[in-house]
Image: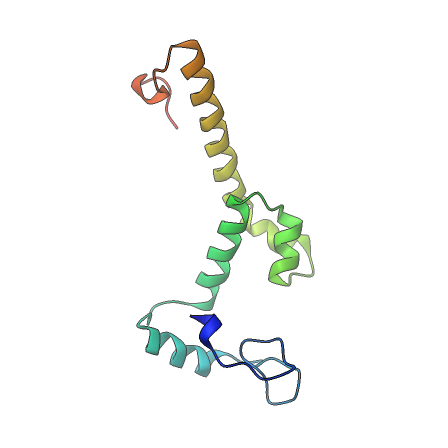
Length: 118
């Protein structure tokens, strides 16, 4: 959807500001219009940022890199997303355990053993 937004020549921002080469500083009114037209009335900008960070973590990006992508100046700000990294680590551990169990137990998936839960 964002790719279809008309661009201003020479301005890298999706939503340009009033001055050449700048971005819009206060997105509230524009965001209400955008999400209304898209039928996403309850969607907050923060939801979009959180989804972006979640996907980046799932793809293996580090917290410092995600902080740079989100424009955070302090790593502590990005550390709020660390709970997402814990989920990714748990999921990765489960995949490794599944693979080991399949080799040892002749292809039986972990989930068949009630003592092994995620």
